Length: 248
Image (cartoon, rainbow, N blue to C red; front, side):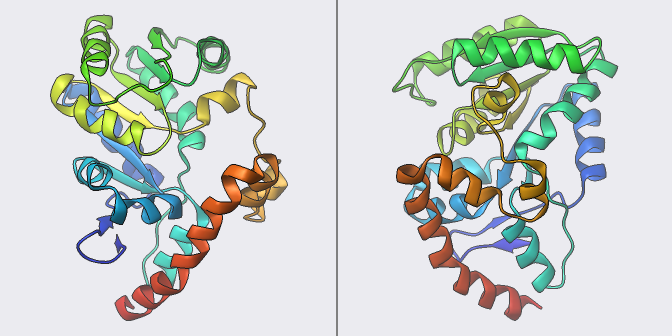
């Protein structure tokens, strides 16, 4: 299903967890690589005003729904898609890699968070190998020379899948560039996922996530940054609802 207004629409093209995991396993096995993006309302506010972000998104092979509003909009339109937040996909994707003896890489966040996330993942997923990790400095350009050096190191590391924790739109731009610079790798944008695993950020309690209130938790944790973001998200909802009803 497509979301947003033309010419800024993007499509959630992988509707279920089973389909996602099956595709990832196939691509890791045959070494064809991929880029996976997780669509949410914040991305939908950024796409019309950031041509580089839009171009990067459209270069992704796989797009899933991250955020209940996207899932609800799809249902309103008569479609069914699974909720697949990037943070929730990390461990299952690592389990696939461990079963295939395929190393992973971590890029983004901070050195301390990457170290903590690697330890947490290896403890939870027996047999997992983290062959490369790197935290780019502040001001990192995901389309610049420093990024190209990271891609060279990623390729040399033997990693099959790279988790990117740079935040939108940097992580999606980095992943899209990675499709040409390191075409055999899978790139997965996961936002704050590694910070949650390492304990450097505290995720909303499970009960709040079940009640679709994780956005409130995040807003209260960082009001100056998150309240304006969510205000922009709420502002585009009426138009998205109308689009879903027309699609239905």
